[in-house]
Length: 427
Image (cartoon, rainbow, N blue to C red; front, side, top):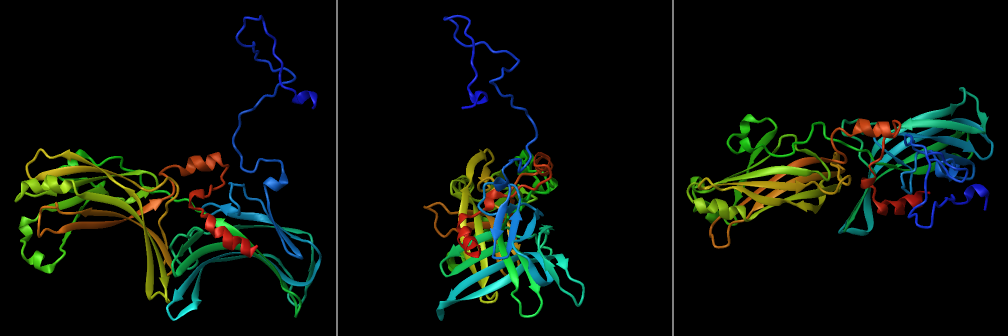
């Protein structure tokens, strides 16, 4: 053991002293820790900074910061930076290029072709960068190292929808995957071997609300919510089990139920969504309070996959959370006000997005109010409100970029370990 690695020694003033004495000046056997900004990839070990992928002739070294993921991960509009190295000289080269590619792959088993499932692919990204191009009519012998840098775009190729994150979904009969990869191509003249190398990537963009959140529904909205632009009212529709029951009731005899929520309908995952419910039943005053006990409010995640060339939709639903319901005020006869708090899933793990005609992740707030058990011929009140969930909270972008020296941090909560099965196959 080197002398500098020995633990520090302390001098005891007396046998009765409970602790050693310390001084502001460090001794030769002590180390001083300096406070400073956190810079991604500050480790001096090259293996801790780069992902290395090899073929017979090519080697690609990517050096994004390690976020603890198995694959190279990039945040919103992140830059894929690295070096292409030739392990041996390559002759008769016409062009050397690096491309960012993203594909939605859907596999669906039909009843008539279970053994051979139908596979469809939709390209969402194809961005090419030329690293070397030989003059017209000539070729080149290429070796050495060639650096490259390609940015992920904000939107899908040819559209205005944001570029979706890496995604994997397996369900009975249908599987969907959104995969990204870096592809290096070496085009050679004639019938010579075309060199290529494919590197799997994770694209995990963060998203944030464009407006600050509303912490609570204003108390004045009980009287007139139309005057407050921050909130909106949604009237619930009565649904009857039998049409004969609907004909036996007059509309004016039924309670009027409305849900009040923030107008933006955009929330950060993990945040608490404030809502309020108003039940008016002037014809049957007791019904207002009775119905308040049967209110069920949930946040639902809905994953959609279009199959059979878009003619069919496979839907998978998952309940993320259930609201806490509080009876806020029932002092007015025939009217009940309820205050509700609904958590928008787990922090950093939810994000709403869509690839039109291929796949989508949606979120809805679902409210169902059942009639009391002893009440016959009474409808069920239902309401579904589409909302948008983001990975991060409002106003956190600038502080994150400052802390990470301008490098966009990926939304690691969106990462799914099951996608590594296919990623390893690509390697």
